[in-house]
Amino acid sequence: IVHRLRERGVVPEPPPKKVAGALTGKVFCFTGELTGLTRADARQAVEALGATWVDGVNKKVNVVVAGEAAGSKLVKARKMGIEVIDEEEFVRRIGRG
Image: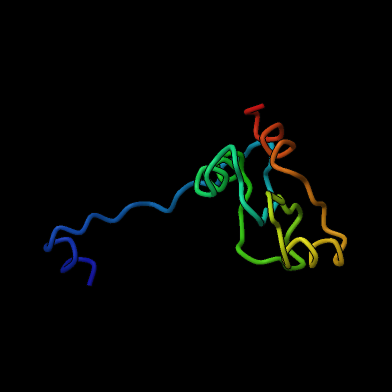
């Protein structure tokens, strides 16, 4: 199969290396509207610093970043005792503020 794929121009790439950084091992979730950066920029920033992100609040989440008009994810995070920070604190933690 690999041989046939290579014949058709497919070039296998190694999986991306895990990045060690200031947020290594942390799992972030974003809720509400971020005003100073896009959601995509926020997700790229945590990945660049060794963290991951998820769309929903669950027991694996370490930090919820709550923007303006945060809703049910914020409520769930507080009930679960997950750390909640605002966008300003998030920007500080990723080294942009």
